[in-house]
Image (cartoon, rainbow, N blue to C red; front, side, top):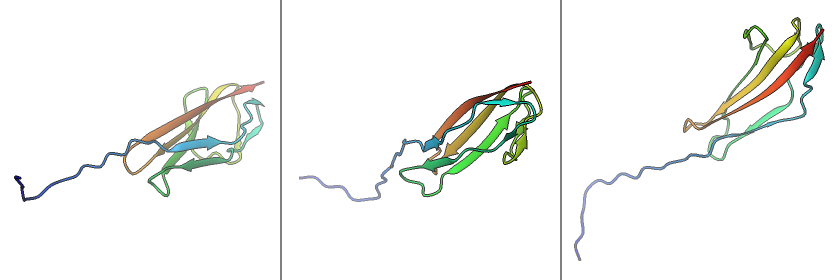
Length: 102
């Protein structure tokens, strides 16, 4: 029986993306209403605290990152985006459309 000695490398692959859960989100508002960020939880099977970025994009494509208590001043479609990534660069993106009317 032949044997070999030397250095061997084992490559571990992990391709499970984080799981993003967003509790009930109000999706219809009037101009002047206040938007409060919903409850968001992110879990991952390998990373204790996945990196999470949350932002709102207004009808003019302006990105808003200070969301708590944000006053909705324009009518149109807003998009709430939650981006979560783990230590292996696996990611999940969840988007929710929010509509503001006059």
